[in-house]
Length: 81
Image 1 (cartoon, one colour):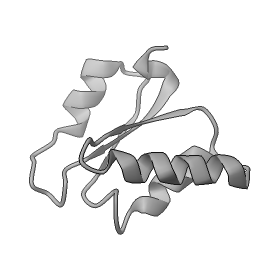
Image 2: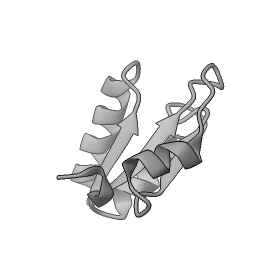
Image 3: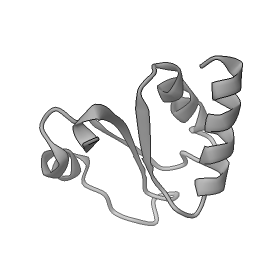
């Protein structure tokens, strides 16, 4: 499955990294919307949960909090999201 078939969320880790959403989207595909976040694992976690509720695959660019995202995804699956 390619990135064009996924919802892509990228986090700057509390703005500790400079990210260019337009360049990332262009590199993936013009059809792949890339949503930038600064606190996806904390204050913006609801955006991840909402993306899960839309169905389809959600790709999160974060390794530090991978366990948290896996836990939330698993809980959403059992909650019917």
